[in-house]
Amino acid sequence: MGSPRWAALAGLVPAGVLAISATVGAAERPSRPSAVERVTQEGCPSCHGSSDIVTAGPGGDNPGLYIPADALIGSVHADLTCTACHAPLGAIVHPDPWGERIAARESCAGCHSEPAREYSAGAHGPFGGKRAVARLKEPSTMPDARSGSKAVRPSCVTCHGAHAVAPARSRAFAATTAERCSKCHADQGESFFLRSFHGKETRLGRRDVAQCVDCHGAHLVLGAGNPRSPVAPGRLLGTCRQCHRSAPPNFAGIQIHIAGKPFPADPKLRAATLCMVLLLVGTFGFFGTHTALAIRHAWRERRRADLGERG
Image (cartoon, helix red, strand yellow):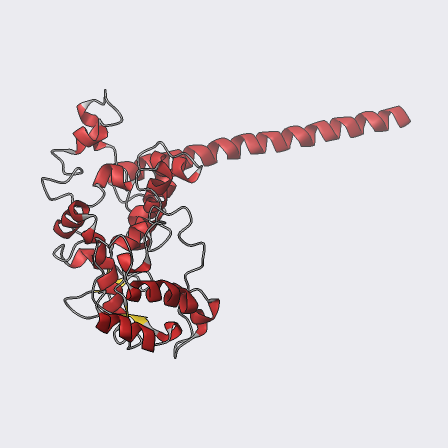
């Protein structure tokens, strides 16, 4: 990277038009950046630091390309250079944009090898099956490398973000991740935030209740049918007891993600919901009618008393 050939190339090509190549940047950087790396650090902000890049190009809608100057402030990667994740600039301007994105996202494994290994073995990884392919098409996603389609698979940046990466151990990050999970798992997210105690408390700003990663895992995410999954029938009670230490054996029977709307699909829950709705409607209907009649009676009595005084 620091050879005379690269240095000469960097000096000949203007910094404003240099681009990131499709190869992954080295995870271990030299203590003193090379000439190409120095030009990269100056060249990237000249294009990506301008909001005009959002409207550049044929499509005219590229929000993911704009990286504000303060994007890394507060990020756990604030001390990294662009070439830590992106390869040094080359003479050809982005010959393969999708390939460059994929290469940059795969570069996470250079530093985070163990989470990357778990991710690859989980349901979200490249061998996780069709269920791992997201249904979203947004700038922060990547194409399925096997099929080449525009269907996308969650990557590191899908959950952690690309530049403003928050500390993963914070509860605020866990709550934010739950919202990101809901973008793909819409039905589960709706039932979690609208019908689950944990989700409702999260919506109210509480952070010490269980989130998606607390039950399903963070990187090694496995389906409930896998015996190694924390939510597998044989391990679910142990997962619950991480917080509810004295939970009885039937505690694991509590449903967190309740299917069906407006009434649950489960027959027992549907019956309980219908009974509660009828009870509430009947109670408010009875006492509402009673209150209206009482007000009417009081108004008539007062009017009768006023007429009697006048007579």
